[in-house]
Length: 255
Image (cartoon, rainbow, N blue to C red; front, side, top):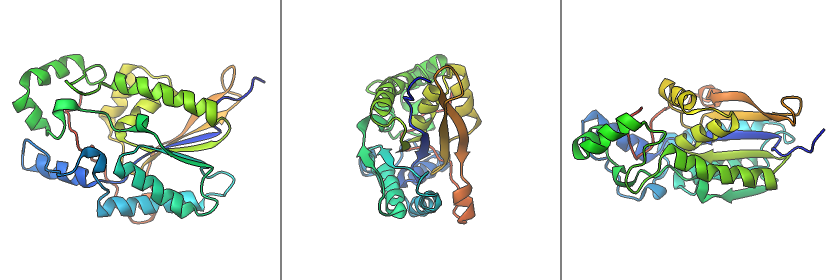
């Protein structure tokens, strides 16, 4: 058999609910134009519920046998993802992780001039961009100063290069954002535009939900990652913690 290149296990986790999620819901409910958050998006913290969600998920990871729990943790540098990862690592206790690393390539999708606008705000303030986005679709549409999904996927391809080079055979937990989870699914499952946007239309990724893959050397020519869990929220439900599916702070309408 050829030498394995993939980690033995990969978990993708969206951060816990953030204060930005709460502010966005409030803005949308009042049909406001802007999401009222004073800090930079990178500094938006977890909400109280987000902290509870993170602790509930951390308990689930900590309860896994030591031989199968994560030994590598990669996370977005954004506070809401970094704090979710820190809580999980702390719950697992010593020896916590072989490696814990913040990686800017796992950051939230950049929305440029659409940052902190509600759906109503985008349509009213930038009607031409709103029409263009509806025509092009979110996969390829790049707002001025921002990114398309394709731009995010491009930077994530280099994350995969790092993972296969440095963490083959390891058990890797990635804590990031909704778009990052979806775009990594696109890469791991070799999806196309229509399929990943179908997943996105069907349901948002819940906060602290788990999507996971296990390496199976008997699949394909050289073995591959096989999907095991999708948007798994049982740890939150078991802990009696509310499950939330809000979008992140920068807002754009669904395709």
